[in-house]
Length: 135
Image (cartoon, helix red, strand yellow):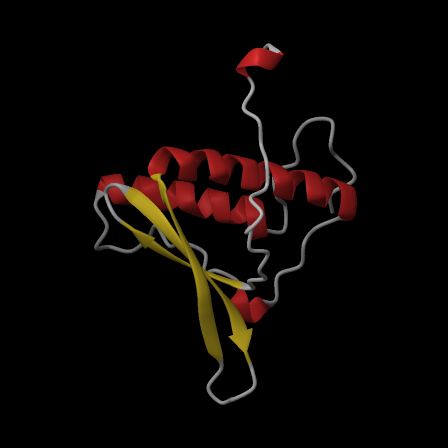
């Protein structure tokens, strides 16, 4: 790609730099909305997540973002080791054995279980040339 066809990236002077340790998702046929929030333990129980920012993006942007998020996690784990996830916030492993699932949905759930295992299982996929560093 030549320098003339690259997109210039600049930070807006009003760029908000916020912290989130919780993300929720809302979907439509048109787009994906991510709602970001922070766990507030000042008034427990119950624990409260205070949502403070939402970003809505079209599905093609969400797909590209998911790719780059996965790439960044893979690289970080290769350099720093496996990112530990506390058991109490671990996403449940999808169950393809639910008798109410159609064959189509069962195949989708099987794939989702494979993805879950790659992120959270005891033996995640390690890309070629990166073996040994991720444990």
